[in-house]
Image (cartoon, rainbow, N blue to C red):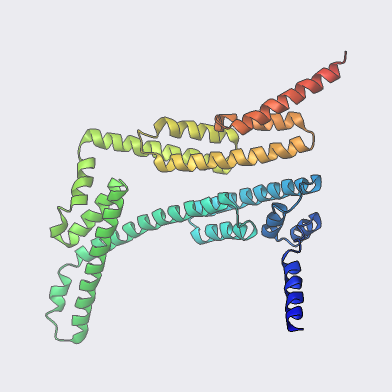
Length: 339
């Protein structure tokens, strides 16, 4: 009896293990969308177990459109906030969108970019702060000696506090100067390390300071640096103009400008930014074109895709979409013309 019971139990367990898993349904996807759980809706809509279905394809398209719209709104707000120095608010804007679309590479990349921009802004502010403090401490350089003449313990405490502040500022300025030099920000490196040497003369020949001053020494180099800085400012202004306008022509113009002056002005960071913006814009316009094509608005889809070809000249899939739509339009034109 025991052996029979064990066999029966094993067979029942085997049947449970091999019971087919019910694939997600369109109703499951719609329910998740209704609840605002877009991460789950996306997961269900792209589940390999789900059978391809016109209704499912429609939901997938709706999810793509909603994701693109959320990304666009979040990026626009975050860039505006970052431009005003509101770094925490900018990051929170991206995080709020990521909570809805945790699989979005665009949002993850935007957050990383914001982190880098925030770091650069913070380093520049720290440099300004500690250089100012070095100037203040330099003006009080004789004060610790004067305080040492007092027997009151508070005077000794004040002198020790000034020495501690000097040591802290010195260490920070050296770290900042070396960081700026490693990023070829020679003006900032020189500012930080000159401030450090004003507190401790032994740092007047710091290797990074020597390197910075060598780059800034000659008139020709200074002129090149000024031109490079001007080009960088113009590149940043063109990027800012596109972010304000969202106009495709502004994006194309900014990309051409940065590509033309990338080597002359060391625009690697700006080049990385513009290429990311171009990829985002192409992805968004392709999604818009897909939606128009699905609704039978072939002419508008064709025009949308054609507009972004300067940004995606090597996109074979986009070329196929354009070619296919052109054939459809030609066929419709022939049908309209009649026999």
